Image (cartoon, rainbow, N blue to C red; front, side, top):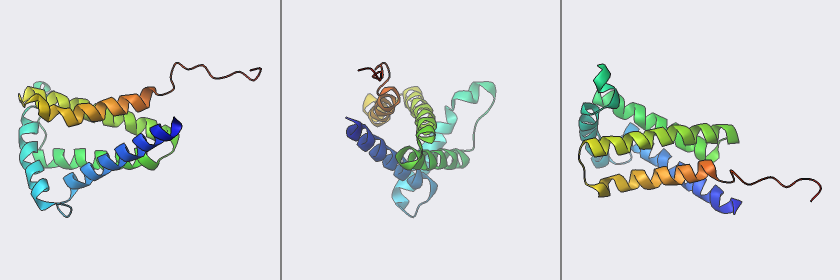
Amino acid sequence: MAFVFTGIRVLLGLFFGLAGLVKVTEQISAEVYQQMKTQFVQFADVFPLKDFGYKPDPQQYLLAVGWVELVAGILLAFGPQILQEISNFVLCIIMIGAIYTLLVLKEPLAMCAPATVCLGLLLLLAVRGRGVKPKSKSE
């Protein structure tokens, strides 16, 4: 069973790394990068801290999310246990923000599906093995 969770963790980490790389550079896909730039203009308009007077620059917002996804994805896939857990938490926050943003923009629920699936997988990795008592030496 540990092999399955390792596979999920590595694939999910690589997915986030690639998603972050697409946001950071147009070298992967110029078309997708331009689409992301356009979307992040809308995302900045509904940024959760906007009510407190902070609205990020869309380009900086795109780069920040991209770098966080890239680094956290690589650490989730290949980092030591503690960094995997921290990366998982950070990526969960990013996915919650993505779902919030899409719902506020009144996007179709199908648009929320990728972020929801990723959040579900991240949460699955976070709780795996929790609640299972370790075997004692006498058993």
